[in-house]
Image (cartoon, rainbow, N blue to C red; front, side, top):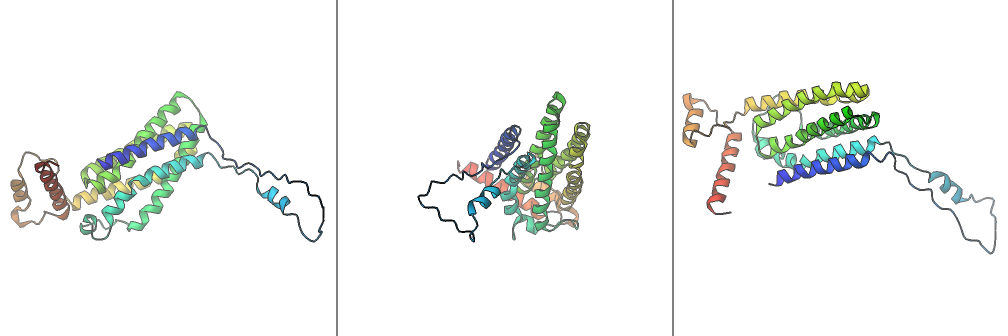
Length: 265
């Protein structure tokens, strides 16, 4: 599946970047060599400043803080789900047609918010890495990698597979796991824990939002004992129009899979 490969590639890229960033604390540009060949004729023009002196002073070593690499790694990992989100939320898409909670923010809000949150995550993790190399720190970082992997798979689950209930479970796991990680961060470096507070607040909001999506768009995802006719008959009994667009899209996806299987594709 393309979505599985996308998530796997994102996780592998993140771990590789974080491992490399652990051994790199700065990035330097070598000072320019300003040696010049001897001239046979020397003509001094007092009115004209020597450009090589200003160049020499400006091309000094540029040092980047180590957290830059961690923030960049987290942001890059977070963007792996962007194509899925854009495809799922574009005008006229299935997501555009379903009912949404009143607290659902405009689409343009999510990009800047997640970019900021991923950047703060990187700064927080970099402080944990630099604070200590003890066994406890290593265990905390492993817990964080698991948490971050859950974060990355939420978008494919919610917008790609349209599994609102599973997305809600992942959201709850994200809140609980971050609530466990933050005290461990605080014991190592308090500032690293404080940097996760905006992310925790956003996760709580996102979980409430995910729950309201489930409530407005119920889906019978796990009832495999009933055939399709019985299921839809129960959904529409008593004249209640509970069959919604999410269910329709889910049923169409199932029909496409069945057609492909029967055709031997």
